[in-house]
Image (cartoon, rainbow, N blue to C red; front, top):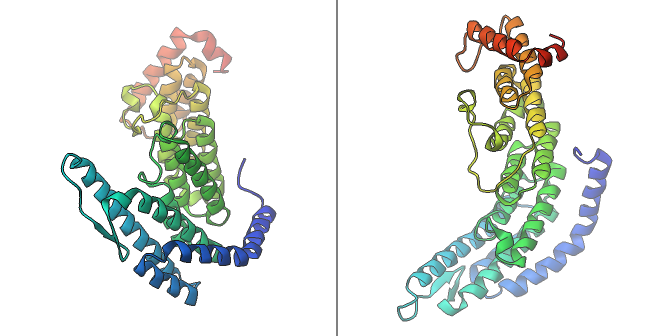
Length: 330
């Protein structure tokens, strides 16, 4: 389905507004009890209490925690390298000195605090693109959520579901921002193997965004399909994503998406569509596409094919598969 109706979007926003007061108060007290050990974070906590609607203060608050987490990740990697040696060095994180034995517990503590602070600021400022971008970026970061989460632990699976919910919540207000859609799609391509979910997300993005921004959505959409496309000379120009997940994309799904791309967005992609139909033995549709290209005086092949080459290809299809071409009413 496409985006939620405006009425549902307003109801969701009103629920967020009515709920934000008590929720922010509870989370603020939880944050103080959790972060009282970190001197620099206590200073930021006082600042956001004084000016809770200042976006730059919230951004600095979250970036301070992320810097501390980066230092802890680096310290953990260094500790792994010198396991055979005796002990390790302490790390200063957000005004607190962390010993090597406390690294894991402090990482979990700061990750929890980072998510909690991100939710707090979004309850107060749900229309801020910068806050949503930082929040989603942290939820999708590899240290917080590895790519192969299902084989690691159930905790990462819960984080994956939490990231999905966060993306859907962001799209209630950020559905006109193509970068949010592209980040959502990239997240699904990295962590998800369900072709239907990925295709529906691309379709929702095309429905939500204005036509002038479709040029940002179609290239990754075609690149996602290119994993299953044949590697012929006419298809070498299509960028292919790294095959991190094996997805069996049905032939009909490929053709339907490429038809939309060729007929609604890029008319020069008809030759690519014809080559794919030719590969999958869709002779009637391939002949119809070549016929339309030859009748279009303004058509210029993106692959450098001349009109003579197109005529020869059409003639070969008509002579070798006359019944399928006749059924296409040519």
